[in-house]
Image 1 (cartoon, each protein chain N blue to C red):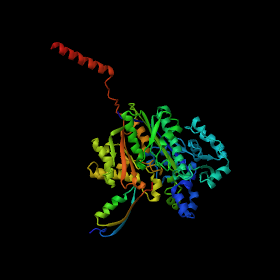
Image 2 (tube, one colour):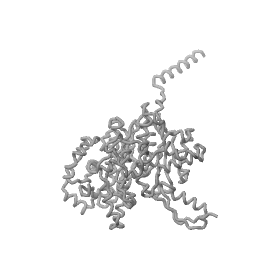
Image 3 (tube, chains in turn blue, red):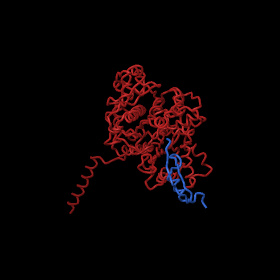
Image 4 (cartoon, helix red, strand yellow):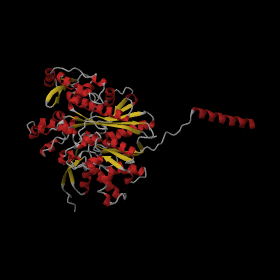
Amino acid sequence: MSILNGKKIIIIGDRDGVPGPAIEECAKSAGGDVVFSSTECFV
Amino acid sequence: MNSVIKGTGYALVHTPDMVLHNGTTQTTEMIVNPDSEYLKELPSHIRSYEQAVAYYPNQAYIGNITPDELAKIPMPWNEQECPLTSRYGKFGQIMPQEEFILLMQACDVFDLVELDSEFVAANRDKLAANEIIDDSIMARIKEGVSAEKVKDLVENEHAEGLYHLGKLVGAVKRAHDIDVNLSAHVMHENIVSKASNVVGILHAIKNAGIAKEDVEYVIDCSEEACGDMNQRGGGNFAKSVAEIAGLVNASGADIRGFCAAPAHTMIEAASLVTAGAYKTVVVTAGGCTAKLGMNGKDHVKKGLPILEDMLGAFAIVLGENDGVNPEINLNLLGRHTVGTSSGPQDVTTALVFKPLEKGELKVTDIDKYAGELHNSDILKPAGGGDPALQFFKVVAATAVKRGELEKADIPSFPVKHGMVGWAPTQGHIPSGVPFVGFAREDILSGKIKNAMIVGKGSLFLGRMTNLFDGVSFVIQANTGATEEKGVSEEEVKALIAKSLKEFAAGLLAE
């Protein structure tokens, strides 16, 4: 059982790391409920 | 035939007062938390010009130290004594703020920049002594106005102040009473981009050894937008920069694409030259005031100097194949498409491995990869890590999954095929292009045979799409290829005559 299954997920992605939409896909596939997803840029 | 890289120019401008007055981290803080400890602490963390010049990554940017040499300097670089103290390098220069403010006035063609006459008198000779500034630019410098007039413009006329060492020395006026796109803030930002762009382009032309009259087209790929309320971002920075730089035979236009724009623009420029549309094209970009001090809060919190006090500019001259200079191979282009995900592995496959497949190359067939060349000395203290190292590791890991590299080779890949980053936090500037100057030299000397330049951009910032973006291209040693020989008019006439003779002979035989 995935540790994210059924959990509410807040995602802060990084433009130079892993962006929000990519984390979102992973979280969803693990059964998570994505309630917020954003990507930030610090460069 | 492939186009070639004839020369490059790289320039930095030290703008400590613009960090305080124009960087968005600071201007936002002034609005939401004007009494914050950060704003109180900030002035004591500003570097002097001499400190900014004697900083290894800045010396790398202007070409006085190579990426390989920089990699040998222990980090943090901001704590190292740097023996390199020249403001000029083989690629360009580090311009001091006082010269730059005068250059901003010279670049203003709508009488928007007004400088204190005493400031002009004190610094005119300094700008005149700058090795790339000629009489045509100095002739544009006005006498200036009184200090009272400057103060009145800022306090009562919505002008944006120009400061030097904490003192008000000039103002950028608004260009319209109510149009927000022509506000003093926007005009300041755009004139800064234009003026820094001029510095880069003049160095590139000098370094390429061409005449200004040779340039037929200029493409600006910075991150600013000029236009009024009826055409925000309508342009055209490129032509305005070419005007000041004296490129009388050039036209030009702007290309935008966030941090990926320079790589996009290099491909477009190479295509124009290869197609024969223009013989000489310059890809160019100026600096960005908004990003000054972007990660300043973390730098101040950790007791570091404000390292994001530099505007960045660059220009690259592309020309017809001369049989000597390195070429841009348009058959090896990478692109992140609409259908590609934003996952690092998919992005890397699209930008790096797809073009390699096209050329039937393995990852190790490219000597150097250049992408995300952000200065990690700036980003690590702010928790931003090392984007360059991260990029090279993803390339290596993807290569392992594809069976092109042994897992044990992952740690050495970034050293052998990558590099450390040295570019300032200026958005579009770090995106691969800072290496083009070094790549040209290394290929000419035979140190490397090719390099892949990768530009990546974050389109979500414009709130139009969440798609990722990026393109890549390969620079390679000159293959000596010349244009395929066409058929001359005389040869066509001879062929027709021969056919007619044969036809006539056939008729006679019948």
